[in-house]
Image 1 (tube, rainbow, N blue to C red):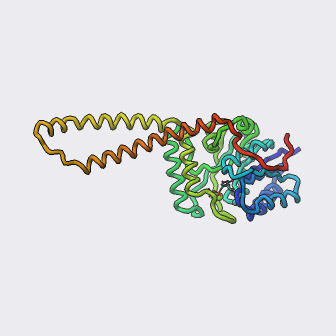
Image 2: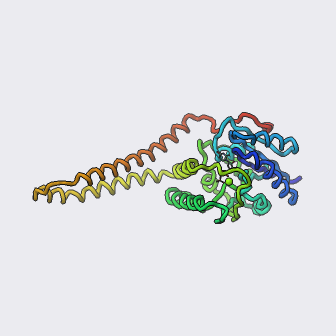
Image 3: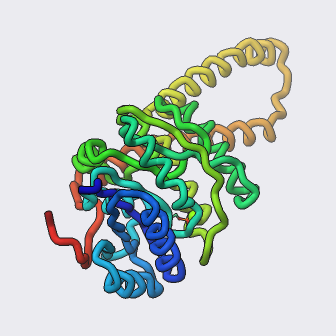
Length: 310
Ligand code: UDP
Ligand code: MG
């Protein structure tokens, strides 16, 4: 019997991409001796994504879907798909054809040689906007500097995981998982494949600047408490710097020099006010995370599905 490969695809307003991606995966699998199933996660789409998936599912018996009750975000959509994927290995990829399905046989081949995690690195490509490339490389620099994991720039959410890894993942109940970081953190034998992203087939990017910023802040604060230490160090440095001011005060006092520094006083107040807000904000993010996690709510809610509970 052939091994089964589960493919998890999150879809948020991707109606025009469903057929294309499903067909190109079908084509890829017609060239290799593996069975496959596709698990499409409809992340609260407002267009006809779900109908397109259901229509397609009628034509084949290996197309499954999970419908979220609302938009829970890309990372949780992938997590939900993985929670329901019981193939020998599980591949996650985007719906928009930016992750070339032609790479799947190479990923499987690496997996067969004993790697439990085969992830992909996006090579710089002109198909990506300058802004996206720049923000992505800055993000990884900051993330690696501030946290204890080491992510390669361009790491994408296009990866193969052995079922052993996926079943470890099933026990993770993080409120807002940052999958790229978690996978790296898990360990196991990992292998990286480089690829050139294609252009988005249809529709536009669902990652708005706000969503990207949130993912970035989340990536940092999920993997380290270093920012909290940074706040303390900064506090020390600034208090020390203020001590250096004492000689000047004594000098001014002794010599009766009029203090006419209104502008500099206001500047200092504004600067330190801002600094305090930033640091409070950082602490706030961590407290907020604890708050959300202690409520122990389900991380995502499934409205409907055609998967029989295994
Ligand atoms: N996506 C999702 N929920 C969201 C945002 C995105 O499920 O809230 C899906 C989207 O349908 C796509 C994948 O996540 O399959 C990656 O999104 P996108 O292509 O918009 O991001 P980009 O490639 O621009 O980083
Ligand atoms: Mg994309």
